Length: 85
Image: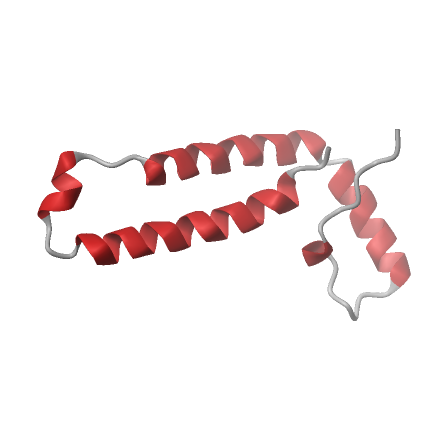
């Protein structure tokens, strides 16, 4: 089975092909670290998605919600980079 292509965000367009190959090898050999990072990111996303009744009591709830959504969006973007299978 062929390995899944790595997310293009790993490789700047100006990076030489040889450096890309070296970096790809390094990333693929760090699978256990990537798997652990994925778990940490998933846990943080889950935490950000949980709400309590107190969250709705503050007048700044909409701002807090917008911030959470932005954090989740950023974490999901990073998460896509950590999934190697």
